[in-house]
Length: 213
Image 1 (cartoon, rainbow, N blue to C red):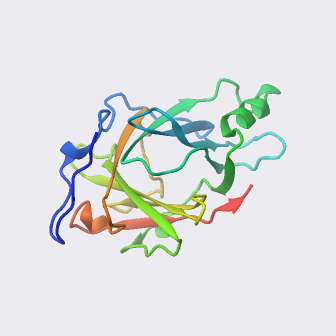
Image 2: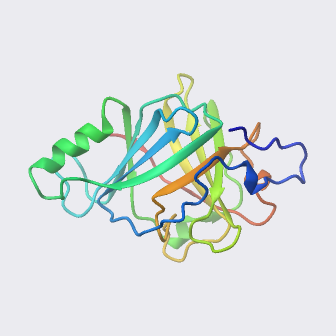
Image 3: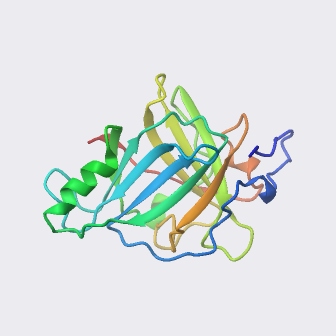
């Protein structure tokens, strides 16, 4: 499904540009010990797998850490985020194998899972990477039409370098999602990484520090 073309500085995106999936009507608080999948909305191909550890991760993993594994080239005009619980509970012998399998053979980066309110900075983040792409979605924490942004920074070989989140309101506890949706649809902003192409109001961004696993 195509995204809305952005033509001028005052144009903002219509929510009809979203691919099927919307903000996901069935929302629940996903435990910290969970996993996310970002896939091409048109083909269903995996692009990113994210594993979030809890307080007792297996050997080789750190507690309260997000592990981002790039499995495909991020060139899709629309992506879908899906969230799941792990089949094996943390602290069990099976948990390490489940984590390893989920992250697969992708290039894996790690970043701290916990953020403070003050880590969200008002303004626009200026990408420093060779390539970057901005996606938007309806904010699952809002009953109205607030939006969020997901900016991915990529290297010359399309490797993942960093992920920057945008919200139109600074989260009180630093979390990008108060209630993580089971399914969330993102559409690509064409030819821009400026969140004001999504919405003209104020924006807050969070940029974690990603490091090789």
